[in-house]
Image (tube, rainbow, N blue to C red; front, side, top):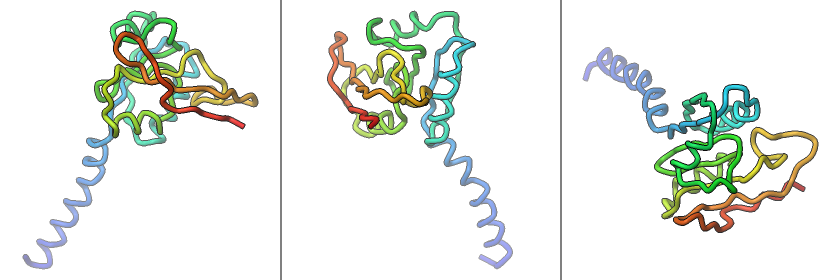
Length: 149
């Protein structure tokens, strides 16, 4: 390979790096109402942590939550899908990454309600909250405990 060909080869490789990186980033499909500000903040959190986000404004998230297999009592303000899992509410990106890496047999994760201090719900008050792993039949176990103290 001549010097010029090598430079062209390296330049082409450098141009491809951003494409490869974006292709590898998991895509999170988010179903939210158009006026929800905390959902937008949660999506920014995901993007800052390496996820691609595709938002869908919907009239109600309840049908999407039901289709995803998340029981209504575990609901929050938005429902998402990534890697075959449902993500309900303000689940931190680190928990989503851990679930995707572990490939556990589950419906997905939920942070029920809207816990203060969770991603997208930042403020002066911070609650302790659990992210729950939702299994078939709606059974849950604690996936990650978040202590905000």
